[in-house]
Image 1 (tube, rainbow, N blue to C red):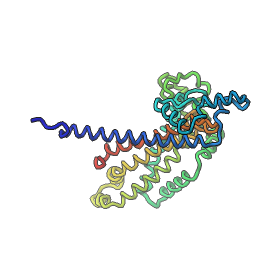
Image 2: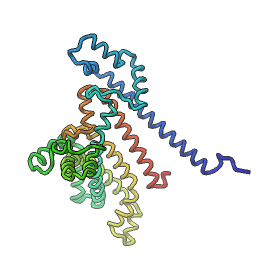
Image 3: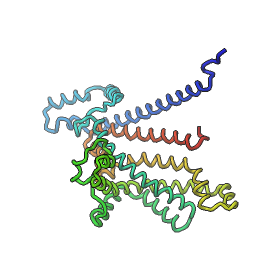
Image 4: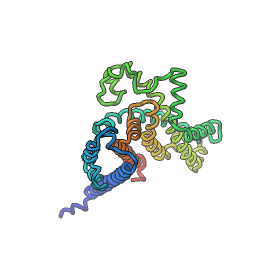
Length: 350
């Protein structure tokens, strides 16, 4: 007699995975719904008049009232939100009042620039922050440790926009080592076909190495400024994790058995903090998208942060809500990726 379907191990495993997937989708949906509701209500409570943005300050009363009805502002608040929610499900976030284009189109146009900037900044921050944190723990209370801790203090207490202005003044105006604001020299701006929006890829695909070098020269300074905060956070947390590991008995045992200090730290202790460091890096990457708002404004970087700043200054709530949802989605997806990598790197968490 055949065994019942539900008693088969493979079927039970599939049902368990389906259950987890359902819970994950539900949690993402609830998070985004809450974020959308909160941002929508804040946008409606602000003393801004979106109708003026559409018709202008010199419009007649008749034109004003017509636009007011077309925007749905004559409806109760709950009706406005449900209507917005219904459209958002189909990726229709309305039109941006500043550009007149759909918000989804605007975000798709500017988002690659921010991804490129945040990714380069993350690479710099992790490449410097992790070794600094490890060496700081290895040589605690040494001059290197004091230097790293001082850098962490500066990174926490110094605003990015001030660092950006100082960086422009010193490295662009004073020394001329890097290119200035913008994403690429204006002479290449219209010669590169932007197929993907990722300038590095598009210039390499076109074989335009001069444009590629111009893009690299433009991204070095804003990415370094953005990476500074991430580097200090990563190094501080890595130092803390590693210091806790170096106090464990297995480290002392390894040293008594004759294992070198460097091998003990980098092979054995670092393996035990890998998941924690990964979490810190993932959170730092998510925060870089948020932190890019001021950096992009200072460097005239045509990305998501600058678009959000312009929308906020203009009171364009359709664009603001769309950008807020995207930032929330980035945080949720990065956390999900972390959960997946936990299970991959540390079987005890499965």
